[in-house]
Length: 242
Image 1 (cartoon, rainbow, N blue to C red):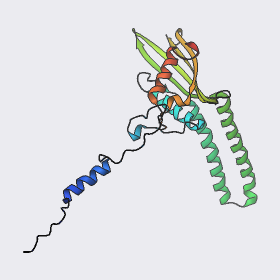
Image 2 (tube, rainbow, N blue to C red):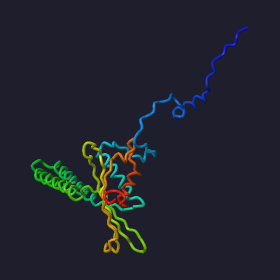
Image 3 (cartoon, one colour):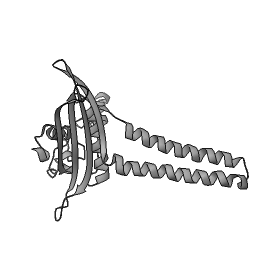
Image 4 (spheres, helix red, strand yellow):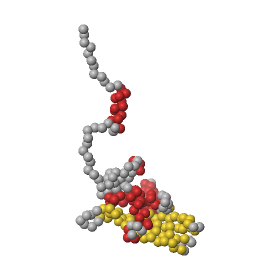
């Protein structure tokens, strides 16, 4: 009598699909991995669209990211300032004027001979240099390190209060031997009423903190911590006014 040969049972197609899906989603445990080294700050949990990742050792990158975050904080409630774009608009006007002069002169020279074009081209080069120099001098001497100038009006006890805030920032390295990258904030806030005739309050404060205090272990800018520090400077709880 012939013996019945047994065949190994194979998982069904649905079981294979389920197992593959669980592997892709990370629910199937593998061999235990070695623990990672502890970090000074925990990783922030948020959606990818909200995260801003930087290299904390890059001072320029950190300053740009922190400056953008401060602007977002100041225009959003509860601060709700209206940002003045005067500096940006003026530099754009100078830059576009210089570019249009260069473009217009180039187009004119394309249709005329070199002898006819030399005069207008020289004038265009001089005007371009003058406008570029004005833009540089304006940025250096007038705008300086200001990253935000804002204004808001609020109704308090039946009177209209006007607040104007100016925020300047910079980065630097701490003295030797630490050489820690630092982010500096200098701000002034003026609140008045009666069309600016009655001064209600005036705040001038500045502070400096390590860039690493606002960056998580995986390089994400900590908006909450940065906003908390800004509020502390405005309220005089931190900085030189503390």
